[in-house]
Each structure stands twice: as C-alpha cells, then as structure tokens.
Amino acid sequence: MSAVEEVVTEAAAVEAVPKRAMTLGTGTSLLVLAALIIMPIFVKNFIIFQMTMLLIYGLAVLALNILTGGSGQFSLGQSAFYAVGAYTTAVLMEHFDVNYALTLPIAGVVCFGFGFLFGQPALRLSGVYLALATFALATAMPQLLKLNFLEHWTGGVQGLVVTKPDAPFGLKMSQDMWLYYFSLVVVIGIYILAVNLLRSRSGRAFMAIRDNEIAASAMGVDVALYKTLAFGVSAAITGIAGSLGAIAVQFVAPDSYTITLAVSLFLGMVVGGVGWLPGSIVGAAFIIFVPNIAEGISKGLSGAVFGVLLFLVIYLVPHGARQVAILGQQLAGKLRKN
Amino acid sequence: MTQAQLAQGTSPLLAVRDVSVVFGGIVALNGVSFDMHKGQILGLIGPNGAGKTTLFNCLSRLYQPSSGDILMEGASILTRPPHRIAEIGIGRTFQNVALFPNLSVMDNVRVGAHSKTSSDIISDSLRLAWVRRSETDVNKKVHEILAYLKLEDVAHTVVSGLPFGTQKRVELARALAADPKILLLDEPAGGLNHEEVYVLGDLIRRIRDDRHMTVLLVEHHMGLVMSIADHVVALNFGKKLAEGTPAQVQVDPDVIKAYLGSKDQ
Ligand SMILES: Nc1ncnc2c1ncn2[C@@H]1O[C@H](COP(=O)(O)OP(=O)(O)OP(=O)(O)O)[C@@H](O)[C@H]1O
Ligand SMILES: [Mg+2]
Image (cartoon, rainbow over all chains, first blue to last red; front, side, top):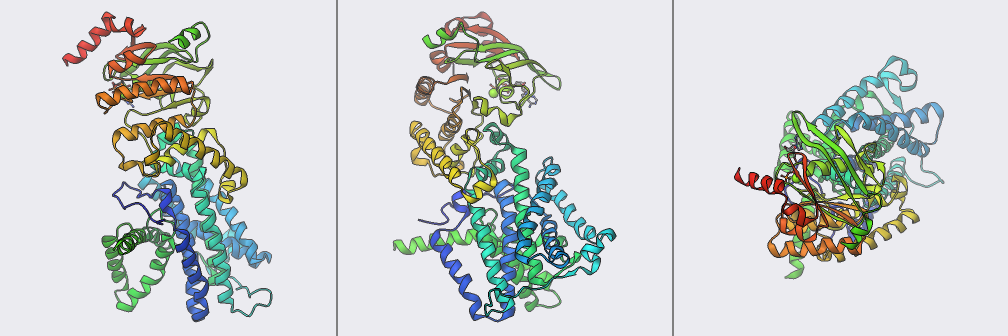
C-alpha cells in the first residue's frame, strides 16, 4: 500500500533507492496531477509562467535523476544538453518554420545522439572525474554557441527570439496557460515513460551497474552500452526540457545556459532526493523559488541567504524531499494505528 | 557419480588448458590444466592464495591469462568480453558476495536473467506487449527459483539489510536465473555454521541433479568438498598439485604437505 516503503539508510557516494521506492503510489500521483491541472485556473499569468518553468526544470532534474539515481553516473554538464535542445527548437522554429510541437521530438533525438556520443569517452571516467569532464562540457557550451561560423543560425551572442504559440483549435486560453497545459502533457508523458524504463529490464541493468559493475557484467549486462544509453536518455529528456524552456522564455542566448544552470539542476536533484523521481519537481521548486525567497529576506546578501537555506535543507533532511515523504508516511501510518 | 562416469569418455564441457596468470611479479596461476565433464561436481581446493579465485576470474573473463586457453564446449572463451560469458552458460557467485545492495532480492534475481532475455530502451519505455510477456516469464521463473531456495519471504526486501548467509543464497538464486550449464561457486560455505554447511552440500547436489548443472566448487571446508565432489583438483602457489577422486586427493602426500605447511604459518 505504501508509496515509499523503505527506511532511509546511510549509503555510499551515490545514495540510491530501490526501484519500488523510485515512484509515488497511484493515489498520491493522481492527487498531484489533479492539483497541477486545476491550479492555473485560479492564478495570474505570471504565476502560470512560473509553474511552466517549474514543470520544465522538474523535467530536467528528472533527466539527471535517471542518470545519477538510476545508473550511478554524475553530471555537472546537463546545461549543455539543455542548451542543445533549446537551440534545436529555436533554430527549427525561426529558420525553418517548423511547428513548435514537432521540434520537441527532434530535439530529443539530437540530444540523445549528443549524450550517447559524450557517454563514450565518459566511460573511462567515474565519480569525481566524470563530474569534472561534464563540468568542462558545461563550461564550453556557451562559447561554442557564440562561434562565428554558427552565427547565421544561432544569432551569436544576441541569441534568437522565439515566437510563443497561441492556443490551437480556437481555444479561449492565454498563451501562457496553453503552454502550461502543453508542457504538463509532455512532462507527464515523459514521466510515465521514465517510470516504465526504470522498472524494465533496461532500468534494472542501469541500477545493477550503479550498484556493482563487475557483478552486472557477470550477469551479462553490457556495462559500456547501458552507461552510454543512460547518458543518451538523460540528454534526450534534458533536451526536451530545453526545447520547452526556449518556447516558454521566448528567447535563447548562450549565457542562459552556463554552468550555473547545470549546478542548479544538480542541486535540484539533491534537494528532491537522488533517485526518487517525484522529488524532481520539489527540487525544481527549490531552485526556482528559494532564490526569490532569499532575495526577499535580503537584497544585498541574497546569495549568502540562499546558501544558508540550502545548508539548512541539506543538514536537516540530507536525503531531500524523499526523506520528508517517508517521514510523512510513517507519521500517517502511526496516526492510523492509534 | 554415475552421471559423471558416463561422461568421462566424451569431450569435456569445460577445458582449462595450461592457464597462467601473472600479476606484476606474482605468478597467481602457473600452467594449470583440467577438464570438467557434464554433470560433475568438481571441487577446487588449495590453501589461501593458491589461485582459486584467480581461476574463477579467468573463467568470467575478469582476468586475461598470460598464456593458455579455456574452452567451453570446444570453443575458446578468451575472445569474449566479460558480459558475453553468461550467455554461453557460465554462471558464478563471488567469494565476498557481490550483490546489487540497493535492489530487492527479487530484482537481484531478475538481473540474473538478463542474459536470457532481450529488450531495448524504446520497447521498455513503452511497455510493448512482447516486453510485458517476457517480464511475465522472467517473474514466473524468479518466483520458482526463490521458492526453490526458500527465499520467498524476503522477495521484496532490499538485500543490503539481509544476513550474510541469506545474501549468499540470493547470489546463488541470481546465478541460477540464467540457467547456466556450469555453476562456479566461490566458497559458498563461508560464514555458515556446521548445520548450514550440511544443508548447503545437499542443496548443491540437488541443483546438479534437478537442474542438470555442472558445478565447480571452491571451498576450504574439506568435509563439504570431500562429501559432495566427484572429482577434486588441488592447487598450491598457482600450480596443480594433484587431481583425482576425493579419496585419492585426500591421501596425496603433496596435498597433505601443502595444507600442513600453510597451517604452520
Ligand atoms: N588483482 C590482483 N592483483 C594482484 N595480485 C592478485 C590479484 N588477484 C589475486 N592476486 C594474487 O594472486 C594470488 C592468488 O590469489 P587468489 O585470490 O586466486 O587465491 P585463492 O586461492 O582464491 O585464495 P583464498 O582461499 O584466500 O580465497 C595471491 O597471491 C593474490 O595475492
Ligand atoms: Mg579466493
């Protein structure tokens, strides 16, 4: 019956969750879904826009969660995949007049290829060294996007303006609200596919590699293949998040996709709970809203306040939102017994 | 016994030919040869550091022999990458339990069936009908093995919290899930008490008989080896000391000396 069954235990470098606990129970999922569907009806357009960004960053954190929580590989380079997805959409929409919805799968395929290829050299690295290599990728990406010979397509330092789509079928809905529901459908679709994947033979291969590479290979798991596949899948999902992000923000520019974004996504994963997919949305909320809260507390020292808040979270709940969910569930269980 | 004797005349299931392994200056294996026949339980004995685990690691392609060859049903395995050993029917357990600690017992055993199944990430994400069917088959098989090894009660428990003895049994279950032709067991009795060792010996014999497997058993527990093995190979300092029936090897002067020598240290 319970959604999060196992008790948090101390674990090694990558804090992992058994597969059962990687998702929410059906009841809780439906409740969250209902809230996400109803909410925009009651709030202003700007809040709807922020909720769209919440979904988009949630998707990007989910992608990192599949890579780190699933296959045990670190990445500080997710911003690069996000950028490639965003630019794919912007270039296709603005230069080739491709429908925005069609650019998403294209961005996914492009980023899958990019991630899969990047995964090849990354095979020789693990842990901190892999994190460093992906860090280099994130650092290089904005500069690559500024390259002169690409300027005709990418708009160089200026970037590209993206047209926001109207609601189709003559629906009486603001652009922001339409884009929110469009993103919601995409995100939920991908979430379901991701859950399926992690529960499948391939997902078990990812987690076997995460837990013990030698034993995994003795069971017939092609470690190199599945590690690069995990990179490909993670990059593809991050790329689709980037696509949605480009459409929502209506603008792509090299400096929107710096290492800061990659670090934010990493933070989001840790705060949400490594390997716990529903935590991704909580992590995304943290990286979107807590900086604003910090600014509200002190304009001049917002960075420091953010740091203190982050420290508090990590100190109080080192396993992130997942730990809170488990505690909540244990409490509910006790109340029911009494 | 009879099964093994019948097989004697035929070609071996597994042939280890003159295998040597060198680590830096240490010669861990030095020209070791022996044959394994279908249906045998072959006991591999030797004092600590004799090279038993090293031989296992050659069979699972974790180590590359510096010379010699290993033939499975007549074909060399030395051209295969490690992840393509399970598919030719060589399964193993590890001396120091190498499970997937964060996965449940059931999932550990499911991974054991990886080499017996196929899938791709797209079909898996979409849960296509053929993937669902294959998963149903795997689950049925896993349940059968868990029942066989009396692990049903812990099927959904995460393995890292289980007692060592149970973990060893899970490892055995995981190896069985691939239906190997040859089962390599590296010190399965480690950490078990007298009673449990007795039960284990019975179990290994049953696995050989019910599931038609051939077993290569590394064990320090002499009582166990001598009671269930059809054939014994003794190693010391990477060299084969003796080979024969348990009775023959037990009285071999070189073997006795090697064991007495190691006790003196
Ligand atoms: N990866 C390695 N690198 C260097 N030396 C190794 C390695 N693996 C094994 N050895 C050495 O090879 C020799 C044989 O070791 P091995 O583990 O095969 O012995 P064993 O017979 O399994 O012993 P035990 O009964 O203690 O398990 C030992 O001297 C060991 O130190
Ligand atoms: Mg050993």
